[in-house]
Length: 228
Image 1 (tube, rainbow, N blue to C red):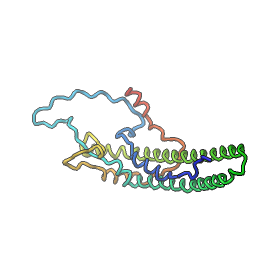
Image 2 (tube, rainbow, N blue to C red; image 1 turned 45 degrees about the vertical axis):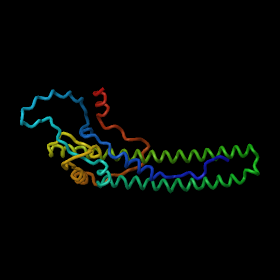
Image 3 (cartoon, rainbow, N blue to C red; image 1 turned 90 degrees about the vertical axis):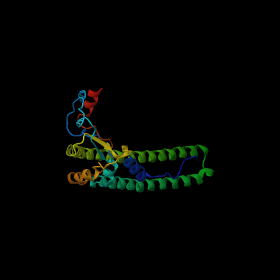
Image 4 (spheres, rainbow, N blue to C red; image 1 turned 90 degrees about the horizontal axis):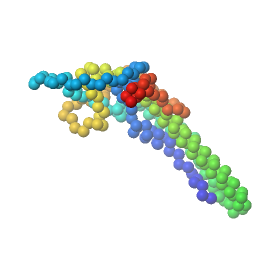
């Protein structure tokens, strides 16, 4: 019999690793209103007099998106929920995989006394059950990932206005992810401030199983159409 017995079930580790690597996919300003209009073309930059401050010069602040996920109260709750869902899936499916493996071993011992047509039928049935289990495992992974993505979108909605407020307070006009910073001579990282304010408005956030991924935020389709 050529069936692969003893299916490895590592949903918890796979899912949590995937969502941590993904981080928080927010775009500043994308979640701040229900309607979106096309962005007008920038006006030509006026010449700057010698010694004057160029109003078009970049004034940068930095945010660490992965740190927000790891250190904010909502992000930690999300990771805890995702890990719990993965652990529960591990227990559920490992028990089924163990039972299936025992069945395969018993069938292997019966091959010598079964007729060839019976062996073929039993093997097909076993393989079907094995494939069905693998499908259930993959579906559960997808449900956890969808649930995490939905929670991440909710976190984005709360974080967007906070970042805009910090941008205005610091007189900045450009927000950069810390991973994109190669070298800096000053500290312009506002991550601790963002986390503190996020904790105040979003102290927790649940991750639940979902059959469907998150829907685009209101106005997202209109923005894409306008850009095209």
